Amino acid sequence: MAAESAGTVGRTAGTPVMRPDSDDTSSPSPAVAKLELIGVGKEFHTKRAHTVALSGINLTIKDGEFVSVIGRSGCGKTTLLRMLAGLLSPSEGKILVEGNSLWDGSKVDSSVVSQLGVVFQEANLFPWYSVAENIALPLRLRGDDKASRLARARELAELVGLGGFERSYPRELSGGMRQRVAIARALSTRPKLLLMDEPFGALDALTRERMNLELQRIALATNATVVFVTHDITEAVFLGDRVVQLTPRPGRIRQVMPIEFERPRGLDVQTEPEFGTITRDLRHALDEDEEKNA
Amino acid sequence: MSGNRSRKLLPWLSTPLILLVFFACWDLLVRVFGISDLVLPPPMQVFDTLKDVVTDGSTWDHAQVTATETIAGFLIALVAGVAIGVVLGKVPWLELSLRPVIVASQVVPKVALIPLFVIWFGFGMTSKVIMAAMLAFFPIMLNVQLGVRSVESGQREVMRSLNASRWQTFRHLELKSTMPYVFAGMEVGIVFAIIGTIVGEYLGGSEGLGYLVVRTLNDLNAPALFATIILLSVLGLLLYFVVNGLKRFFIPWHESVYGQHDLNR
Image (cartoon, rainbow over all chains, first blue to last red; front, side, top):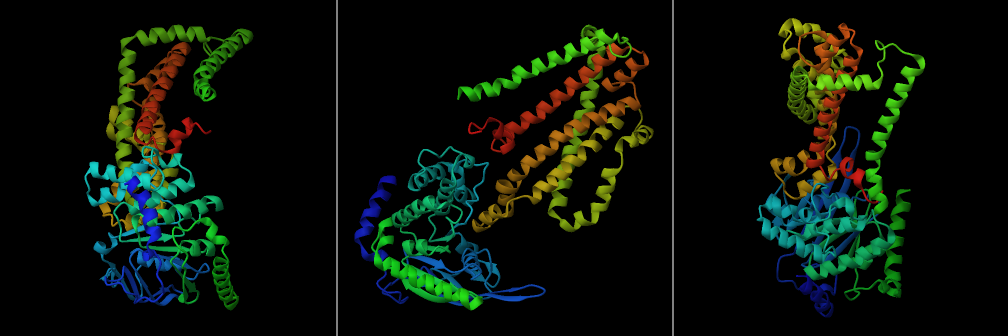
């Protein structure tokens, strides 16, 4: 698997599959969309206040696409991801994973949830389990036998650059390594959709850059479809095939920006003029949100 | 590495040294001030008596009684403490409505209840077992209650996002993350259990090391009194080490265990 994944990076680089030539959601994809959000909204009711966190979110994500979701804090991006992850029920609208509805009212369809992989801001590893056991936990819960679990854990440890650390315990790992374990754990069940909520938000800038490169490599190697929530513009543009910008109160999609740099992207792409233009436009749009709310 | 190894050995060197100094000071004190044997016998005399006490078969019977009472009381406290702690930790409204009662029963000097237990359960082992259990129960119960509530919400979310059943969440998350709290309660609980047993033996009955303490006191046999106290301390130490060993075996991953051997420190 390690050798194969290393090869995949090179292969995908030549193919245009990973680069959508438009942000049009009806582009020539014969299969059903990987993820479809139709009029999704979320309201919170408390005794004193009634908040519309998200409203009228429509979005279609294709197979193998990497979509970054960006916005100021409080714009509902985490709320959106929690709804996608089956942790929080939407007040309105539909969320379809390969055409199957994730939510039935406020009840989550567990057969759809089992097709998702989630990475949170904190690695949330279980300190009583080794790296391999942490990675294989989803498989254990699913009832896979021990031998296949271990084989898969070893394969994934290799993939996320933790080969040789299988028997280590979380306390022996750095923050970046822990997050790699969390990514491997999310990938263990070969999810159809990988959901990431500011996964590198707690890491220092340098580690974060490296993790971005690693994540791109892993996503290409596994041809994963990813929804990646972040508040970091550079990160969002660097990783995304498209960047979805949310605007707060109520959270709505302000714009969807296609990012067409070739993959795999090196860190140098960030110095290209076009990269600068995109990030500047996004920053202005985010600043306008801020002024509007000030 | 060698620095760390010698650091690990340090307590094994320092402890005998401290004991040696302690006994030397004790001896010196007795000699310089000419303290009566009845008040403070010199250490060598205590050791001689300790030898006699240890070789006396009846001492072991007494020690066995004390150990049995302590362990029985502790086990009762452990089972009850874990069970009730889990329920109170899981059912907030129950905990809230029982809180005044719990606080009140904690504040009551439970040792004062021993005469009552003697009246109800006689001078035998039962009253001591109950005393030990009562004292050990609270630290265990409170720790478990805290532990049940301290399960990290992020880890809970992971289990939820993995479609884990209630049983799986319990087995892989709640049980494991509560274990350190159980052991923290047990370490306090075992010490309290010994206290309960000994005080129980002081106040009623004709068996156990606690009874031996009172008897030697009545005989005004200070060396034997000291020897018995040493025996009691050794018993307490042994029981504590058993609990501590269990902790090391069951939660090697926890900071309270690996922290002491962390090579990075």
